[in-house]
Image (tube, rainbow, N blue to C red; front, side, top):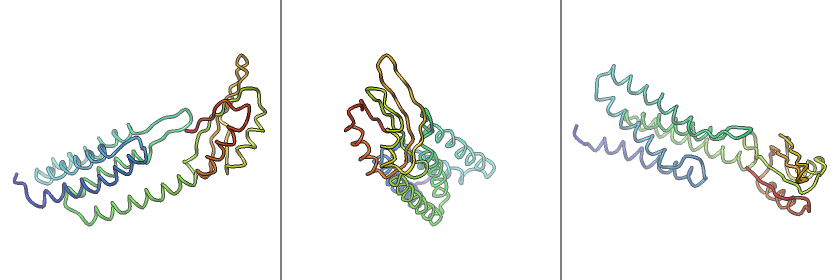
Length: 211
């Protein structure tokens, strides 16, 4: 196969746009960085270009294999915590960039451009919700006290800065005379930062950890 300008354009289009998106994900400390997104998108693009050259029946099998295999890769980006699962946006991003590579590989640049623009709209609104602490962007907070403290006192402190809170569990240590409380909280980032400072002012606070 001869390398043509059209072929180079397809790979450059996928590489540059995916690089921008992947770099933003890495700078946001997401579990998957720009390298993975670039490899997925360019790999899908390469296989799609190959599929357009070979027999139609074989190309359908090849294209379907791309979508299926990327689904397993996306599942690997999910992170399971003790109370919830993280990484759905990253997993979906891996899958959608495989489709992005397929579309560019087929040569449909206009469709790919619209798709890419919509991806950034989703990511922008996603970041807005995260800053507002809404929905799935609840933070898990673990509070350890140096003595037995009434949980209502802790709940009232959280309520001053957070719009919503859910007590997950409480662990009492009679030997150490400590209480460990785990909450899911919702609120603005700046208010959660204030909450952290508020807890450290308490004489009974041993540690506070956010996830």
